[in-house]
Image (cartoon, rainbow, N blue to C red; front, side, top):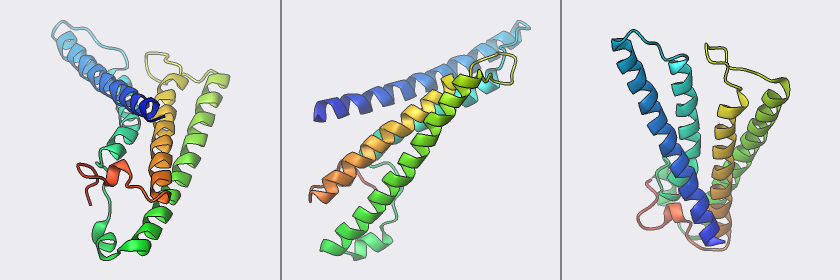
Length: 168
């Protein structure tokens, strides 16, 4: 299971990085094209979609690396079972909110696909394509949160709280 989860998080970060490279290429094409009087249709729209996708796909790898902001003022004062309880409640709450968001993002993808929604720009891009990156990223984030929460409940140290991860 560990190998599968690590591969899932690597895949998510790889796709996020590919989207950032895509943003770079779109902007570069826009800059170069402007010198020759060419316009990249919907460049701003494509960059916006790719930015949102990259952010959502990077959520899980960032959690695993301990890169999310945590409020450590209270946690530093708590020890033992009290700290475990606060961490478990916060982790469970985060997981529930994220599951809710993932569910509705996937519903949005399905609705956009069913209705044939297109982006409003010059390029008639089906909206379910960029929305899929958001839904996938949120789903992988839910998996990472669930993994961390289960580890915490087992009395183990989640990856984002271990040495090298977890900034408070």
